[in-house]
Image (cartoon, rainbow, N blue to C red):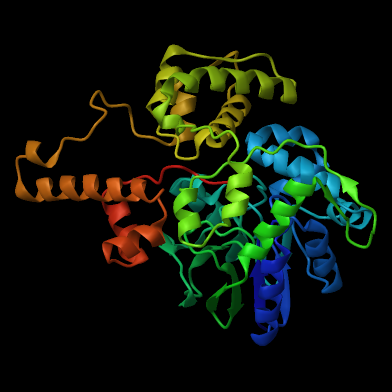
Length: 431
């Protein structure tokens, strides 16, 4: 049995067609989709029609969940909300019916399939889970392997009964030990976020996972988006009627678009059409004065959603929130606040609860590690320099591991190993 697992197509019909052709050549016997078939891309109906035509089962992604529960739109950043609003307008009756029948979890072929994090979370990112949480999942699930998407980055987490091991995956074949337990993120078909524009999916067979990267003409997809922007109208699949799109577009990116245009990876006409009024929004770690007001706003909003009394943060809890680096930015902050609201029993959210949710070490007075020249021993000085150097290079490349590795003349595994050794936390979390 050769089982293909796909995820996060995001309405990118060009990428999905290329993946389907690749799967046919690879001799796949069955396919499972991990959700987020809609959102961002211009052709969600074509994607859903193909899933139905090929009888490919799909679990719910957080984008489909937002369609079924519109109040969930508040969880998304403004750009994603605008994109989803436009997507929802475009959905045909057939697509709407298909989404309404999707389930959060699928257990089949001896494996568990869920969009975010097992056992059944649609919205939790794999990178948000602590090793303690991962071990708890591995110890309770009957299935030895779980497949997830959501982060758009290929990764495998394994557990041998004592140690949790994180392994970044790239194109090729990786074997996984039958006596261990695994969570495998298969990446994204329609919107990869690891510095490689090729679509990604996995084929599992005989104790190994084949990671496929499939090139496609992404400039065609950009052209379709540009056409909707220019003409402000579109047609649903199977319909000849032009539908007017009365929307205002807000676009966001963590890439340097002028450089992407220069490199031929982004259409210059689309860039100039979008670049009407650019706004630079610093990462949350660089505007700490916004953390507490945003957290308080989310607390009030979430308390109302859950029918709970209004909760506030103690002074010590606020300090904990300010100490965190927030690699996932505002979305991570909202997820954390939601967990805090659920876990707190009284009207105040205390420091202990915040520390437990963030899974951080006790706060230190010294917020910056000493530089190499302040170290007493040569080895400590070398490690301090390596951490400062690698952190700077990762930030220069928006924490894209592949891009950083290429510029430093290293491989992805070496970068991940160094990050773990030097306790470098990824920053600038992606949607």
